[in-house]
Image (cartoon, rainbow, N blue to C red):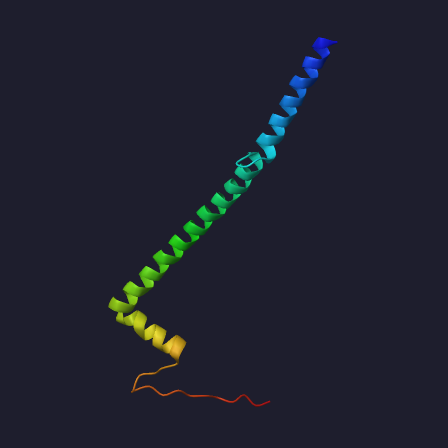
Amino acid sequence: MKQFFYHIIALSILVATLILIIYGNNGWRDLYRLSEKRDQIIEDSIRLNRENKELSRIIHRLRNDHDYIEYIAREELGMIRSDEMILIFNEQE
């Protein structure tokens, strides 16, 4: 009977330890959440680095590439040269 009592105590301690490992502060559950958060931060960092590189390329082209500046002025701002004329045709049925 005494041995059975020791087994129950050992089993109780084991179960309590497992509960603390899984659900306690800094337990398995927190580790899993932090791991997911870390993965998301790494993905965001990679995406932001790509965006920064692309923006750096655009800045370099805007500072140094006159053809690119002209392209942007024409496409985004609708500008034309002084020797050009815009013709607008109305389609009639």
